[in-house]
Length: 349
Image 1 (cartoon, one colour):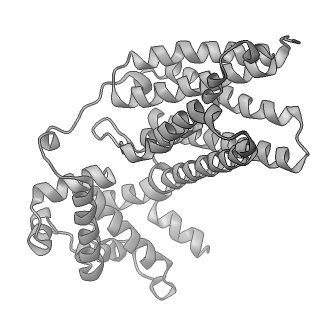
Image 2 (cartoon, helix red, strand yellow):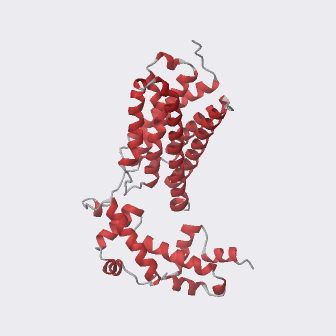
Image 3 (cartoon, one colour):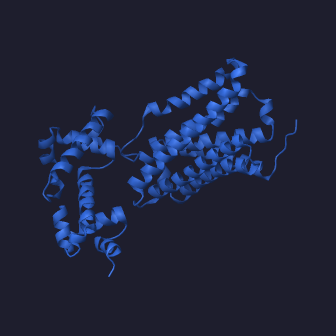
């Protein structure tokens, strides 16, 4: 058996060792986000460990089921998506997302029992499903980041955004590896790219934790108002959908005096349930949700050529903003610029 380490395998073994250590450190934070992030790091570390064993042929001395470590992408994808959507006060976690991971692990232990003439077909199907699963969660993560937190500031949001792009790079390398492998154009350097992006993810998380300890170890602060409520995700979704329909049809968000009580009377849900639904389903409170609606409406007004001569005060009032400061801050939050700057970008002098 030819078993030897080169510069790459030595680097990846070191990275895997650091990942195992780092996951333990992150787990010690004992928060829901730490458990998610720690599991992600642990998954990458175990995959790297197996890849090193495979390249150096040491895997031949171990039980075949250790190859199940290559399937940790089925766990990393959902947990990464949960991590992105979770905050200090809200935990986003859905068990059905983890079903494929448990099924594929069971499959690995049962694989030796399958008819040998089906091995090639099973392995090919397995590779296709793994890549589809990885690309789905990469797409979901990118969509969430670009839509929900791309313009938000702070160490935690910066960590989430950069990790999302690294995770997308990992998915692309993974997909490219199998695409070239089945087409007969595979080169070992591309195989190393998968492990390299895994290494970058592990070290970036470690560096972020070193530079901003609160990003990884700040305690969760669940919203006490919602701890004892029994509202289900399905009900929360229904409430948010009905709220969306009501506000879009009535455009009552353009009323600067709009209150949660007013909306509650109109759609038939209690103020408590509406607040909880927004908090759990959209990670927003009522004022944030309404101001986002006002921003979207004001943005449309600014883009309307027929209203190009309207003063900012008119636009602000028409959209339902009660003061200039909130108007400006909301635009900066979602666009990174003031309403005036946005209009000038559309209609330069």
